[in-house]
Image (tube, rainbow, N blue to C red; front, side, top):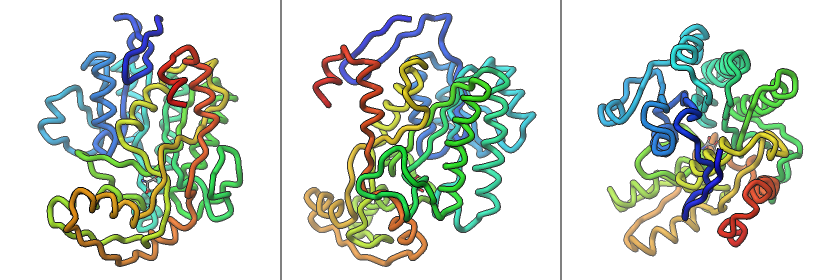
Amino acid sequence: RQVTSDASFHSVSFSETDHPKVLITGGLGQLGVGLATMLRKRFGNNNVILSDIRKPPSHIFHSGPFIYSDILDYKNLREIVVNNRITWLVHYSALLSAVGESNVALARDVNITGLHNVLDIAAEHGLRLFVPSTIGAFGPTSPRNPTPDLCVQRPRTIYGVSKVHAELMGEYYHHRYGLDFRCLRYPGIISADSQPGGGTTDYAVAIFHDAVKTGKFECNLKPDTRLPMMYIDDCLRATVEMMEAPADTLSMRTYNINAMSFSPEELAQEVQKQLPDLEVTYDIDQVRQAIADSWPMNFDDSNLVQTMLNYIGSDSRIAKAN
Ligand code: AKB
C-alpha cells in the first residue's frame, strides 16, 4: 500500500488486486448511496455492493451492484458475503431514535438481533466491520457539554440502548476474536439528496426542503434545543478514512466524531439569511423533545483528532486544519 493525499481527502491507495470488496447493509437509508458513490470512485464500481430489503429506485439500481439482503436472515447474509468475497462490511441497517420508540420490538430485532448476525458473519469471515453509533448512545446522566468518549452511557431509547450494545459487542469481538471492528458515533447528519428516516435530528434536514418548497417550516423541537450535527460529505469522508486507517493506529475502536452544534432557532436564522420570507413555527413533539434533552449538546472528539493526526501527521493540510 502507498499513502497518498489530495486536496479534499486523506487517502490510502490500494492496488488493483487488494481492493476491498465492500457490502453496505441498509444501503437505501440516508447514508448508503453517498457512501457507495464515494467508495466506488476509489475501489471501482463492482467492488461496492449496496444492499437493502427495499426495491431501489432505477437510478440507484443502474449506478452499481445492488442486492437484496435481510440482516435478520443469517443464511442470506452469509451467502452474500461468501459468494461476493466480501472483505469490508458497512452496517447501516438500523431503526433510528424516534421511530424506534414507536416500534420497540422491531427496533430490538433489527438493531440487536441483526447486529448479532453481522458480528458473527464478520468474525467468521475475517471482515473489517464498520458499525455507526450515535450521540444517542448517551443519556441524561452523561455529561452533555461536552460529552467525551468515555463516560456514563445510560440512554433511555431502544435506539441508544442498541447502539451501546453494538459498541460493547463490537469491542468484545475485537478483543475476544480479533474482529476488526470500527465505530464512529455520528451526530445528526445533514444531507440534501437523501432523507433521514425517523430520527430526532431530522428537523435539521426538513427545514431546508420545506423552506425551498413552501416557505414555511414547523419545527418539532424547542427553539433552543442544541444538538451536535454534521454535513453528510464530512461524515462519509471520515467514515472512509476510519475504514482505511491501519489497525495499529487506532487507539480505540469507538470514537465520537464532531463537526458543529446548533439549535433550531440558530439554524432558522441562518436559513432566513438566504430566504428572508421563511416562516418558522414550533409544534413540539414530546417524544423527540425528551430524547433531544437527554443527548449531548456538544461532542468532544479530541481522541479521534489525535488518532487521525498520528495516522496522517505528516499531512500539512490536516495539521493546519487542527
Ligand atoms: C437520530 O436522530 O435518531 C439520528 C441520530 C442522531 O443518531 N439522526
